[in-house]
Length: 352
Ligand SMILES: *[C@@H]1O[C@H](CO)[C@@H](O)[C@H](O)[C@H]1NC(C)=O
Ligand SMILES: *[C@@H]1O[C@H](CO)[C@@H](O)[C@H](O)[C@H]1NC(C)=O
Image (cartoon, rainbow, N blue to C red; front, side, top):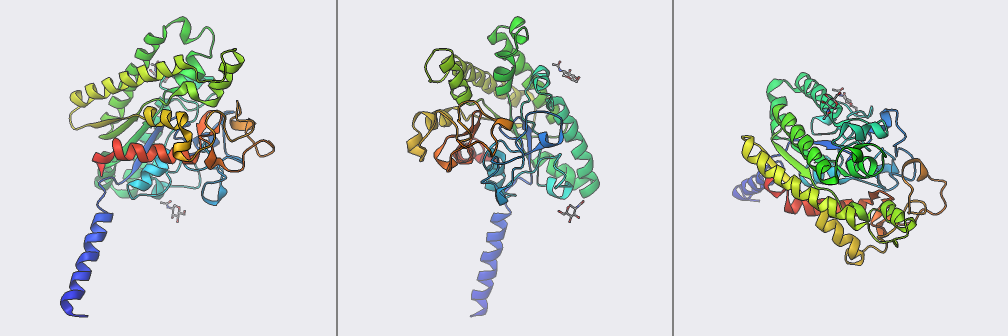
């Protein structure tokens, strides 16, 4: 090998390493609900948990981490796409410490919402307390890495926010005499948009700059809602009125994102909308290799999630990759992967 050729190889290798390490995102930081919770609910007193089989049966080591799926959830795929860890650990999970959280941490809690009244329903972590944990994390990060490095991570990290479905399905439409007696559905959406704006402003004031705010899924098509529709005598189709609310709300979120981008200097706030791709998967499952979209894999697939989806249920499907939904409320890992790829390519590509 000539000397010149050898140096060319060295240079090529250096360029390759530089490109691989060239992602501008040093960490992924997650706030939200069960769509992104990596196991925080395991450590609190609530009935809304999933740290038992068959949850997690397709995760690394077949481990039930507290993710509401058979495998990974979107922040895991997004972190991997940015060259970081293939999964983002839960802040309250005792298996992990600040050395892991420095490249990715999840504060999300299944069952929570923008509205404090939503987290009260199943005694889960309210969004304001997710922010308290985030402040605690910042302290630990500064102790661990020093002020300068910690500040770089805090400003350059990608923040993923995915929350809101429970405000409608677990709270507004479910709790009699609650929010429904004070707000029309349109007023309630505006109330939530106000809370969403305050939340973004708060994490911005704490240093966050690159933020993805996720829209709602077609929530009228979750298997549980279809079952409700069926027993309400309307057939087993999606609840169209819920999908209309999700679309309206997404429109309002998108407007909020535009406004905050012009109000908050230096912020890069992205609206990541899963609605369209998710709806297409539900309407044309075979295009994506699925066989079943109307019921879930776990148990009968009609209404079970959490403790009702357990390993003793004889009806659970063998191959979750044929199903769009894992339990009556949550997508399978395969659906999570398709939606994450879509969001990374469309909404998040400017962060590479
Ligand atoms: C974090 O945990 C790992 C083991 O997973 C251990 O080796 C390391 O020392 C811990 N680091 C800190 C800062 O506690
Ligand atoms: C939610 O609860 C927290 C803690 O009690 C409080 O600081 C916050 O103002 C509440 N938010 C709303 C909109 O009521």
